[in-house]
Length: 65
Length: 494
Image (cartoon, rainbow over all chains, first blue to last red; front, side):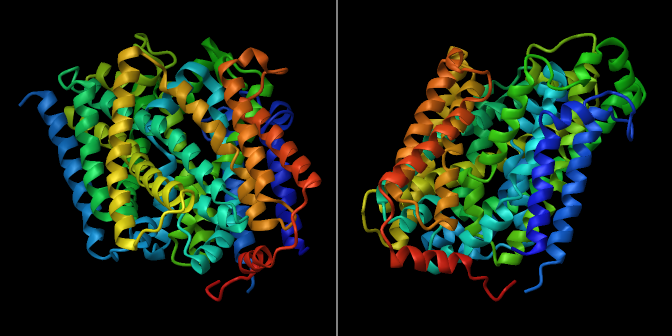
């Protein structure tokens, strides 16, 4: 299996744990600090959206035929 | 001119533009069923981006999401979470489905699965589960459109009239242009509702609290629990299960999966998945609108009315209210059109042709799909009226319908990736999983731990597939191997 596949699979495993219990509960589920005017519990989820976009772009651009 | 007339004039102007945009592409497509259902496999990145994004964001976006944030607080973030995880598998599933779709002429996921396992009854079961799932979902869209028109005209237009007029427009352009009409209206509607959502999402917190952060600081001071997950009425188990089940089921919704067969090439499909998270940012202003209502002095009749309630309470100019009305209708229509189109295509293609073993010419199949579009629309409209009359919660029906859709996942993954699974095992798993989901949906008290009925159904589904496949292993099949070889082989358009 190519390294980029393993890295992508690892990223999504991490994202899954980060977005549900226990990852979200332990790391992102707090009100302060505010990020861009949003409470941490909101900004944390939004951060995963932005990060996932970046990861998918990188994965797609590294796909050589 | 009264405010209601101005509001209705803006909404009517929007409906006319939608109709023109939706009918125009019908001039270009072929008269075949493939043209009507899969747009002759010609959709480029712009249309694919909006057709997937706008299809996903339905009436729920303008009514349900703000209502959920308003009443349940941080529970609403589960929508962002499952969106992050849910569409990514389509980066791999989509191109594989597109390859076999081009080779075998598939336009639905059920015919793909049934052909892979040489089991027409699989298509029949998937077709009817899909249709049963779509009717309440579509009824919800019709009801949403009716509610919006009713509220912004301060009751001057009844819900049943508003829903009927809006969905008559949808019916016309879907009948005329098929998936191409859906695609181009979704592009127009997607841009329109994004602009509206961001405008209102930033305006309302500023008007009511002086800005986004001041709004959250005031909520933090008075109702801090509203900003913390898992939110009001949910445990962490229910929050996590909702994320997992929704993420697994996300790509399985037939009206979304079928878009794999409409894309021009594999690169377009992949880029659509890569760009999808940018469409998710559209949820941010909708959540902000819901949070803006948390400390508002006068509560709405019900949480889902929070956005129109705020707009009407603030005495905004009728032009702004009319634009909101148009944006909310765009959200409803951009999902409703794809659903009615998919439900009719699946009922005919999978239920009648593949599942029932009937032979039809391309032209006759297209004509039959158009008739079924009308039947599905009428059934859904009747469901919306009945639900309103008897005050049945369509959200409950929708949740019940979501369970069977999630049960498609093992069959779809197996069709595109696995050699040693049989159609009989997948059919058994699907039926068992759907039954368990439905039972636990109706009798929530039977759940050993409060999670999501669909998750229990999915676990039973996978166990049944594994056990049946172990006892009755799949014989070697050249056709199955050939299918998987086509699915694996990248095409030249990468």
